[in-house]
Length: 358
Ligand SMILES: [Mn+2]
Image (cartoon, rainbow, N blue to C red; front, side):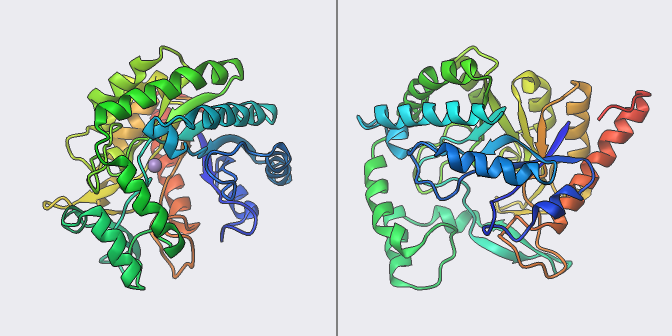
C-alpha cells in the first residue's frame, strides 16, 4: 500500500508538509484547490503551484480529493453540460502534473454529516460524533431556518451565507428519487470516464457518509449491492471507488473486509479508519485500533494485503489528542498514530509471507 496524507494547502492547514514528510512511510499528499468554486475548471497555474510545494519536500501529489461535482450535475439540470465540460478540463489539467487518482462523491447537498465535532471520549480526547435521532427528527427546511435563527452552529459547513442557498437546494431536491440520482450519476460517468481513461487518471467515488439518507435527501453509494451496481455503470478500470471503511462501516450490515475482497481491483484509493457504533445507531470516530471501535481494522488491512493491494491509502480522520488545535478530524497526531498502526499490521502480514514489500 502507498501511504498518503490529506493536506488542505498552504495557509489552510495546521499540519505542515515538513511534518507529513516525517511520518514513516508517507510518500504523498492528498490535496485539492479548496477555494475554487464548485463547477469551475481548476487553473493550471494553481495546480502547478501545489506540485512545486510538495516537490520541495519530496512528496508526490498523485491523489486529489476532491474535485467536487456541481449540484446541477447531480440534479440533472441543463447547466450540467457546462459543468461536465469544466470537470473534463480539470481532469486534463491534473493529468499534466502527474495526478493518478481523483476522489469525488455524489452526495446531494452535503458530503459528510456529523452532529458534534468535538465529542469527548472516555480518555479525554475528542472526536467527530453522529447522533442519529437528532438528524432524523428534523425537517431539513426547518433545520435551515433554526440555524438561521440561532448563532450556535452544530453542523459543519452551515455558514450563514450558505443558508439561503441551502434552502433553495433542498427545494430543488424535493421529488428527486434515488433512481433519478442513479440516472444522473450514470450520465456523468459516461461523459467523464473516457476522458479520465485517456488521461491515465482513475476516478474513485467516495461512499456516502453516513451510508444512508439524511434530511430526506437521496443517497446511493451506501452498501455492497449498490457498489456492484455502481461499478457496472461503466466497465472500465478507470471507474472505481474510494473504499472508506469508516463511512461504509457506520452501518454494521456493511462487512468491510468482505467488500475489500470483492472490489479490490476497483479500489485505487482506500480510506482506513474506525468508528464505534452504539445500539441506538449513533457513532463516534475512534482511534484506528480494532479494539477501540466496531470495525476489525486488522482484518481490513489483511484483506488488502491478501489481494496484493498496491493502491493509495490514507488514515482518513483522527481524534483530537494532546490538546492539538486543528481542523476537526484532521489533526497530525492521531492520524500519524493511525498510519503506524496500519503499517504495523501490514508489516506483520509481510513477515508471515516472508516478504518485505511496502
Ligand atoms: Mn473517507
